[in-house]
Image 1 (spheres, helix red, strand yellow):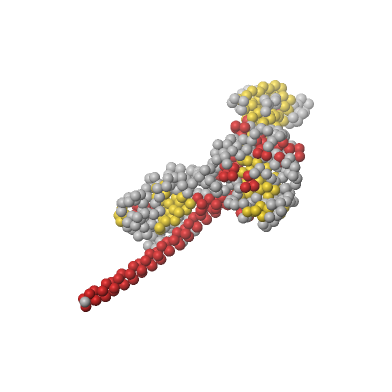
Image 2 (cartoon, one colour):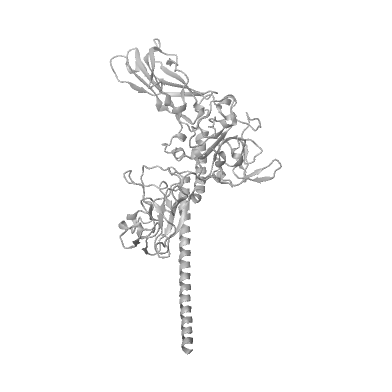
Amino acid sequence: MALLGLLAVAVMVFAYVLTSRLNAASRFVGIDREHNARVLSQAKQALVGWMANNAAEVDNNPGRLPCPEAVNAIGTDSEGIAAPLVTPSTPNCATVGRLPWRTLGLDKLVDANAEPLWYVVSPGWALQNSSTLLTINSDSRGSMVIDGQAAPNDVVAMIIAPGPAMNVQAAAGCTARSQARAAAAPAMNALDYVECFNAATPAFSTTGPATSFNDQVVRVTVGDLIPELEAAIAERMQREIAPALRSMYTSSLYSGIPASSPLYPYAAPFTNPGTSTYQPPSCPPTCPPAVYQGLLPVNQASSMVVYASTPGSVVETLGYGSIDSQSCWWESVNNVRVCEGLYKEDEDEPWRPIQLQLTARFDNVAMGLRAIDTTRFQFYAKDNSGSPPWSPVTASHAATMHSDGSVTLRVSATMPNINDEGWDTRAEFRIRLERAVIGDHAVVSSGDSTLGWFVRNEWHRTTYYATVRRNTAVSLSTLGCIDSSDTNEGCLRFNNSSTRNIRALLVLAGRSLNNPAGRPNATLSDYVEYQNGDLGVQYDQRPVRMSKVSVPTLNAPWNDRVILVDWNSGLLVPDQATVALTSSSPLPPRLTTLP
């Protein structure tokens, strides 16, 4: 009995000691995981902020994430810096590597085992090749296999606290490996830090059996990134795209347009943005609302703009000298008009200037986002005697907009004075006018260094466009909408205003709240919310809508961002902080981020 009593006491003491040590170990494990969770959250916030800040500025690839740290930078003054942009012969940055803490503006973050954090980024979201361009927008998703879930999925990046080295046992998704971390930096192998991944696929795990996995992982998803990216893009559209639309068709560029108001192109009716031609229908002067509200008409001028008829002959416009003879023909299957001939000086006043002009009319200009390319017409002259080379002559142009959306273009040049050049009494001229003189505006050009990001990243696919009849070519003689309920004259309303004073606006449709994996499609409600997509005159920045009896109605969910393009001078655009707008003052940037 005494021996049994001593045995019982020994068992109790052993159990107490064992329990105490397990509790202590558990506390340490809890502290370790809490530390890791804190530094992982800090790194994630910095990563999202870095992306949003760059997207809102001048990044040609808005939405991109930084590359992992360059391996050869570890232990140098460049440690913590993302792998830099390099020559086109270098492949894109590695999918997995250490977190570029210095690039993100962080201190060097380490996990509870004093190991620096690691970082995984999906292909298509980061680049190292200086000639590579990305396509990132509201519908972009991750391209990695995560926990067996095939791409595309919602995981765009992962940040990892690697923990201590371990003897990784083979398991589903995990390759057996005895991790060793003594290798010099250039020879570092991610498998010695990050368990259960296949770099070739790339495929990663965020969990695993204890014998094969001790990483602590935080995911960075499209839900974390896209709302911040959309806010940045809305700011950038307000700053860059809205002024481009506002200055595209004005009286300073086209006669026939009143100085009091710009003209806006017709909208392309909303259809599946992935398959739409972005071409407005040819319906003026009687058009349904869908011609004024829908998709931005980002069609190519080469598929829409045509010569209305064969251009006429070259004429002399100043009244001095004359054209002795000429012949004109088509070059490049009716795309280029060429005229050649002889001009002669004024017999009584040979010192007077001679100006030659060629006129052409182009259809469907107001059906898209156009610009006049002055490199697409050329004037040349040379002496009529001997075989001298053609000499280029500086030329100019004048354009007139018509109510059917066509444009008359007159290209002209003052020709070299025959007397001053020491030529005989005649000289030869040559004029080339290309159809491409009416070309795509920079907003449509993916290669444009300033605005190319918009269409290249396909933000036009998630942008809704609205204008009104009185600001399109069909109302050219009375351009400029007014505060009226008349559908032929009235402006749009914004944020429950009782005043109709908006001439044109854009709605950046956020990531679909109803069908995030189903876009692009032809369902408008998968893009814009409630009243912003009913073809009416009311557009809102926020989900609250006032009824006729002034009772607020909350329409949710809601993530539209409205970009005001043009408005009537001197009127107010009401919102939660009423802002006075004039046609000459820039829109306050905060307007696009109100609730």
